[in-house]
Length: 262
Image (cartoon, rainbow, N blue to C red; front, top):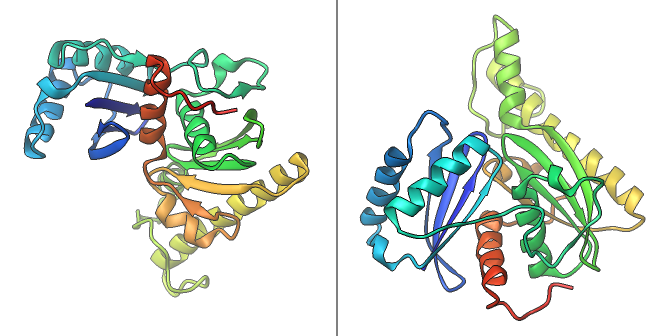
């Protein structure tokens, strides 16, 4: 079985695969102060709860945008599972051509998402990942990673509003019944949810204009379920796209995925 770990700025998402089947997954807070031993205890206890034992883990792979936590999880996996994890980078075998001025600047999560989406759909794509930042990645039908857009995430935007406006308190990030709010909470929700959906639609429209063609638009990430239904341009939600991409890249790294991406 494979342990796949996606380390983001806010959350860490881990999953266990048997072949290409996701058996279980869990989410932890990203905290550089948490030690490898502490994360090990958390992961092992969650695995035990779900009926899995560490001895059955035969491989591991990590995607990380938090360098300090990369080392922490690398150490944790070596201690708890006695495996040396693969670390995803721009030099990993993805099967994609990275048409980026400096490929090392591309976040590993964006690389993983692009590889997973292209492997699944084999067409012109725009992948929108709703995480701490909201990222947009453009991939052609020929497997070329063109680049994309990075925007502040919905959570960051909400926190900035609540921090800088003394009379506004935090609200749940959920869809209000109407665009015109009838109280302060629903007014804030309308601005965040519908306003952010408009941002997504406008950016995708501009990306497709530059690409010269329509693309299949996929959403993933923790807040995809909130925004995707309100964005007219998003056609499909893939909630486990990054974990599935990690499983794919682990197969390619081991030479067990004989199917070419391009």
